Image (cartoon, rainbow, N blue to C red; front, side):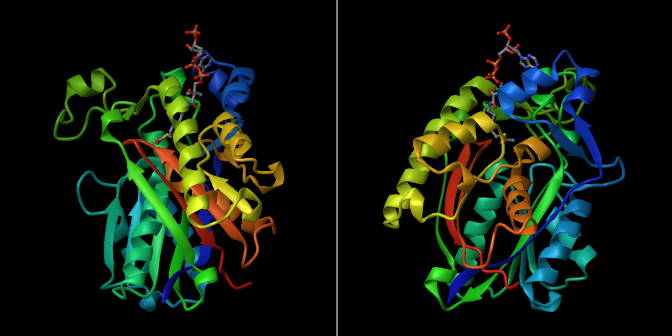
Length: 331
Ligand code: ACO
C-alpha cells in the first residue's frame, strides 16, 4: 500500500489586514511591501478564535471531501508553531475533541513553515509501514499572536489560517505521495526565533518588556539561504525521480515572499502558469501556507485529480523539504 493524498480543505479567518491598514500601524508603505514581498493582504483571527478552531474548520472540510468516515481516522498530526497551549494538551488533541474523534494517535509537530511537508512525511511513513490507514494532517497558525506589531521588518509578512488533508491508501504508486525529502540545519537556529516563553527564557515581565515572546527574523540572511536551499532541494527530488519541471503540473512552494518563489521558479525553469501563488492574498501563514495554496487551486478548478504537485518549503529551525505528490481527491 502507498500513501494517497485523498483530500484538501482550508479555513481563512474573516478579518483582513491590508498593506494600507499596516501603514497606519508602522512606518511602511503599500508600495514597499508589494515590491519586496508581493504581499497585499493577510487575514487575522478574531481574539476568541484560536489555532485549534481554524484547524478544526479546515479538517472538517478535508474529511467531508475525502470519503473517509471520522471513526476511520486513526491518527491526527497538527503542524504548528502557535499551539493553543504551551506544552500540553497538543492542538491535535483539541482538534480531535472538536471533531468527535476518539482513540486516534494525536500529536503536534514543530517545524515552522516546513510543518505541513514534515507532517506529510510522517503520515507517509505511518501508512506505508502498515501502522495506520487514514491520517488527518493539519497546518494551522495564529501567527498574529506571536507577531510584534511594532516591528515593521516582520509584522508585514505574516497572517493566520489553516489547511488540512486526509492521507489514506492506494495500490497505485503513480497515484500516491511519490517521494518526500525533509531536512534541517540547527546551526541557523537564530535566523527565525521566538526567544522568550520557553524554558530557556520563561515568561516573565522582563521577557514581555523586551518583546522576547515575539517572532524575530534575520530576513536578508534567510532570503539568500532560502533561494539556494530550495533550488538544490527541488533539483535533487526531480533528478532522483527522473523528472524535469515539465513533468510537474503544479509547483506549490511555501508562500513567504514572491521574490523567493520567482527566483526559485526561474532557476528551475517552471513556466509561470505552473507556479501556484497565494502570497498576495494571505501573506506567510507558516505551516498553513502550502495546504491553503493547494485548497485555493482546487477550489478555483485548476487542480484536478491525477495532477502531479511538487511541494517545496523552507522555515525556522532551519528546516526545509520537498514532496512529489499526486492529488488524488475524488470529485
Ligand atoms: N517598510 C519599509 N521599509 C522597511 C520595512 C518595511 N516594512 N522593513 C524593512 N525596511 C527597510 C529596512 O530598514 C532597510 O532600510 P535601510 O536600507 O535603510 O537599512 C530596507 O528596508 C531594506 O531591508 P532588507 O531587510 O534588506 O529588505 P529585504 O529586501 O531583504 O526584504 C524581507 C525583507 C521581506 C523580510 C525579506 O528579506 C524576506 O522575505 N526574507 C525571507 C523570509 C522567509 O522566507 N522566511 C522563512 C519562512 S518564515 C517561518 O519559518 C516562520
